[in-house]
Structures are given as structure tokens and as C-alpha cells.
Amino acid sequence: MNRGEMMGRTNRLLIPFILLVVLTTITPPATAAGFALPPSPPTTPEQEKRHALEREAESALAAGDLDTALSGFQALMAHAPEMSIWPMKAASIATMVGKSDTALALYRQAATLAARSGDKSLAGRANARIVHLLEKDPAWVAQRRAAMQRVTEEMVPTLEAWQSRVENALAMAETGGTGGMTSAISALEAELVLLRNSPAAGHEAALETVDLLLQLDETTGR
Image 1 (cartoon, rainbow, N blue to C red):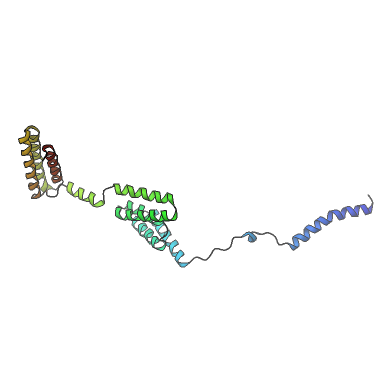
Image 2 (tube, helix red, strand yellow; image 1 turned 180 degrees about the vertical axis):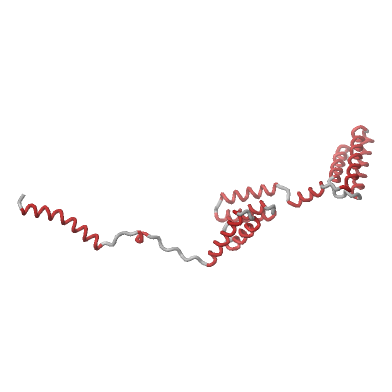
């Protein structure tokens, strides 16, 4: 290979390299900044307040402070009234602390908001909780039942006598024919009067007596 051929070959190898260097020099590199997303809009004071309330409520819930957590989620509802998740969480906590009426109202609010926003899953869960709560006795019913079942020392003689007389009345109704049935009804009616004027007034014995009277009345066709 003569000198001219060698120079020609060298030039052919150098030209692509020189072009690459030139292009690299005049073209800015594609850095990460070139593909960065536009900056997020600044957080408003209202959003900052909401985030703070959310952190406080979640922290209280994690710590088992249910009353504080309930108050926190209810406060969030005021800051973001369109969001169904806050009344849903608040309702769950209200159920845990025994505030059934509050929970029912919150679940209804969550179901309405979820349906409005198209969140069928959350709306379905809220409606299922509503049905469950409505199937349970209200708190006042349970409290009233507990009071009616409570027996104090001064009630004991009255209830023992009531039990004995009711058993005798039922025995008359079972074996005494029509006359025995009539006597049993009269005896039970007298028991109601005695209970109302005794230390056992308000005890569930009165309800049991009324129930027995209704059964005997139905049997005799009165």
C-alpha cells in the first residue's frame, strides 16, 4: 500500500469520528431535566390543614384512641365534604365505641357521597353496614332490657311469690277446663296489679305475665 492509499484510508476512518465529536459538541445532552414533569402546584393552607388533620386522626386510630380518631375524621369531613372515605372511617369508629346512631348517620352520608362519585364498591359496603345496624336493637332497647332483667335484694320476695302464683295459675288453666282457664286469667290479671305496686315494678316479670295472658286469651277466644 502506497502513501496515498494509506492517507485515503485514514481519512475515511477519521471523518465519522470528527462528525460525531462535532454533533456532540453542538447538541445539548438529553438529561433527566429534559424529561422532568412540570412542577406541582403549591399546597394551599386548606390542603395543609387537611393533611395535618388526616395525620392526627390516623395516628390516634393507630394508638387506639378511638374518641380522638372519631373527632379527627369528623373534622376532615368538614374540610373535604365531598370525600366519602372520611364518613366511612368515622362510621366504623363510631360503631366500635358503641355510638350506633352516629354510625348509622355517617354510613348513610358515606353511601350517598360514594354513589354520587361513582364509587360503587364503597357505596355497597356502606349500605351493607347500614342494613347490619338496622337489624340490631338500638342501644336504648338493650339498656331497657338490662334494667328490666336486673334483680335487687328487695325484689326477691315479690318475684318468688309471683313465680309460685303464676305456676299455680298455669296448672289451673291446664287441668281445670273452661272454669280453670277463666280462673287462671283472673289470677294473672291480679298478678299484674300486684307487680305494678311492688318493689319489682318495671321488672320483665310483668311482660311475661302479659304474654301469658295473651296466650290464654287466644286459647279461650276472648
